[in-house]
Structure formats: C-alpha cells, structure tokens
Amino acid sequence: MAEIAKILPDFISYLKQQQDIYGDEFLVSNEEADEFIKLFQKKDLTLHELYEAIKDCQRCPLAETRTHLVFGDGNEKAKLMLIGEAPGKDEDLSGIPFVGRAGQLLNKILEAIHFKREDVYIANIVKCRPPNNRDPLPSEVEKCEPYLKKQIEIIKPKIILALGRIAGQTILKTNASLTALRGKVHNYHGIKLIVTYHPAALLRNPNWKKPTWEDVQFLRKIYDEEISEKK
Image 1 (cartoon, rainbow, N blue to C red):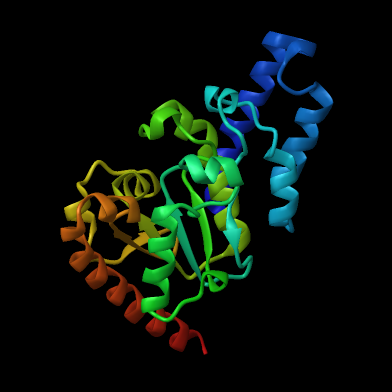
Image 2 (tube, rainbow, N blue to C red):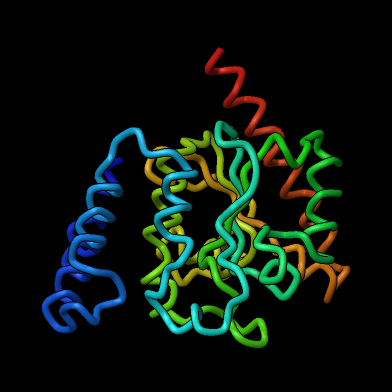
C-alpha cells in the first residue's frame, strides 16, 4: 500500500494533465478518468476489477499493435508471484502469460520444485507485446508498472521470483547485472524477492539451466522457511 501511495499522485497527475490538454478527445472521458482514479484508491480492489479497468488501456503505443492485453494468471491468494518481462506472440494471441515454449518450460521448472501453476500468480512488467519481442522501452514500463504494483498490492505474495534481467532491474530499480542480482534475497517493500534467468533465455542457451535450477532450489528453501515462520 505504501508503494501505491508513492506512485498514485504521479499517476493521477498524468491523467489530469491529459484531460487538460485533450479535453473530450482524451483517451478516456473526464468522468471515466475520475472513476479510474477512485478505483486505484479503493482499498479492497480485486484483480477482476483491476482487469476490467485496464483491459482497454491505451496509455502507450504498444496498445496499437496488441491482440490482447495480457493481464496475469493464477491464484489471487498466491504466496509466490512470478514476474516476467513482457508477453510474446503466443501470449498476445491468448491473453495469458507464459503459454508458449518458455511457458511450458516454466511449468516444468515449477513442477520440479513442487509447485503447480495454479498455486502461483504469474504476470509481466508490461501487459502488451513489444513488436518483434524487443525489450520494453522505459516509457512503456513507466506507463504500465502502476498496474503491476497494484497487482502485487492485491495479491500480497510472500515471495516474488523475477524472471530475467529486465524484470529484476525494473522491480528493484537497479542497473545491476543479472549475475549480480542472482543468488541472494532482495527486499521489495517487505516482500522477499529472488532473481533468476527468464525461461526464454534457457531455450536459447541450455547452459543456463543448471544455475537456474540452483536458483529455484534456493527459492523453494526460502519459501518453505518463510511459510513455516508464519505458521
């Protein structure tokens, strides 16, 4: 909630600024923008309500080329949340994160450490596919990140697994390399966070599967310790 409080004023300012500039030609009407602001301030907001509010988002150019907004998938009460970079082609077509080859590999990784996909919640830094699967631009991340932060606030995971360099750097606000981010427990506003390779990277370079296995075993250990401490 504290993190949302920090970004909400900037987000509201952005909406109001667009209203002032474009008036009735703004991407949403003044009334709709006010309703959206109220929604973000709602303390008991659900994931479904958030999805309904942003499913037609036009805040950045990625909206012009998407097939579906890829919101997220999984257990709303998950103790483990996985966050990737951006949707790919298969995800754009289905509207569900991690359903292509990388997603199938991710499912196997989860199963190997005794998680089912329905046990966790999976989302991405940005909700729309960048053209040709390029890295999301900073401006695109800036527009979309408030949605992810709201998802985290709603789900309240105990642990976050950031999949890939961009996810880790974005969430932790750092330029540190993936090598530097791996192998340790980071603190994201009171939530433990671990960084590992993105499954798509493992498909390109199988040599990274061994360190990824080490990372997820470490994740499982930290998860078990965290959950047992809460009992």
